Image (cartoon, rainbow, N blue to C red; front, top):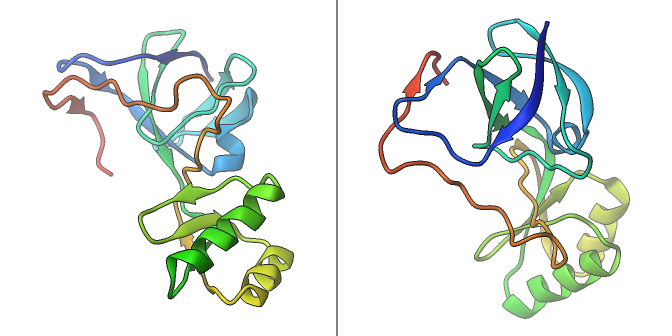
Amino acid sequence: MLSISTKLDHIHADTVITDVVSLSFDLRQKSRIRVTLQSGAEAALYMQRGTILRGGDFLRADSGEVIEVIAADQAVMKVTATTSKALTRAAYHLGNRHVPLEIGDDWLKLEADSVLKDMLLGLGVDVEELQAPFEPESGAYAAAGHHHHHDEHAHTHGHSH
């Protein structure tokens, strides 16, 4: 079993990606977890407490392999509205409940929850349930937000997406 404890800040253009791990947001927040890689290999993740893995992050196994993290499809709700005021009101009420949100230009995305769905529908916004990756905002108190640090050149994949 691979042991993985290093999140890479960046990769070089000639880095060979050995495997892929696809995880829901809930699993990408855990610091100690066993996972199955795309190849079928088992791995144990030992991340520093408080680390949140994002789709597009890269990990290095203790034995040197480089693993790409993919945000897995999961049950989410996409919220849209006919007015920006209605969408802003929905964001306010969700934020007041400390709900993790992914924010787009004219939509919000959150993990599926029937109680929140009822509240949102009561606010007059549209709610679509779907299976999609979920990458919520890191929060106002998080360290500098999330940035991808890839070189401008393509890296070599040893797999297909």
